[in-house]
Amino acid sequence: MRSKGYLSRNNVLSVVLAYHRQTMPELPELTVVREVLERRVSGRRLTSAALVQPGAAIVVRDLTGAGFETGLLGATAGAMRRRGKHLILEFATYGNPPLYLIINPKLTGRLQLAGPGEKRMAKTCFVLGLDDGAELRYVDQKLMGQAYLSPLPPERASIPDFAGLGPEPFDVTFEQFVAILKPFRGEIKGVLTRGEAVAGIGNAYADEILWAARIHPYRKRSALTAEEYRRLYDGMRATLAEATEKVRAEMGEKIHLKPRDFMNVHMRGGEACPRCGGPIAEISANQRITNFCRQCQPGGLFKGM
Image: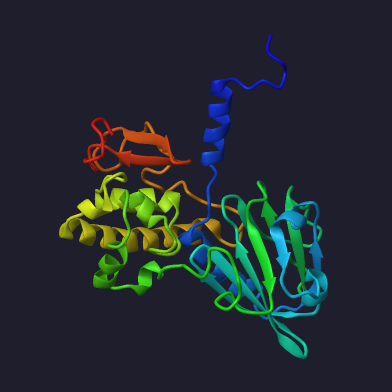
């Protein structure tokens, strides 16, 4: 007889798939979040700065030595930046050098702008009170994200996954893009999602970019033709630009949301391809779900892919 705590193979698979279906914020979402922060938070003075346990102990790292609350209380929010899948919030402190709050939300982290007295979401990790009565909160359902309070900008601090970031997708010419990708080996989707190649692209938008470029996600990077490189470059820029516009329209100032209803193939396994009508494939491998159209994106590594 199986114990109550026993998980069957099917149950384990369901848990794994549910985990993989979490939506990591990528370049389009974080670009819009940065814009909202710039409008709503920049220039505001922090009237409070509170860590919320137990999540803060896992997510927040204080590199100042002064303490999260002590360091930020009374500070004024300045520039808001995005670099890859990181957000960088700069704070001016009276009589001291600026502080930097560097957030890598990873899979389930998100910021939330909340009104006075609004109930906190579960797994809130820290709360910054603003002088207009609003609160900026960080919420992370899986507590996988990282938030570093640093006396140095991230380019000079020891922030994991930051120093090795590649260029931003809109900062490279076609020729530079090709030169950047060529040293990387393996499947093209895996190359696109490596932050060292191009910053800001994750699992979801890699699927969308490759669909736009009509390239199979498991095609080897080394096998790409000159024409495919051009389609990939154009598809990357068009997909990210269009997605940013759609996220901007759908998200508004609800920055804790991750609108993805507009996607063509990602998380649409079994549905009809919007371009050719064929079924959208779904493969779970390498701890990620990949969606693509076998008719529009032919040429996998193995027969049947």
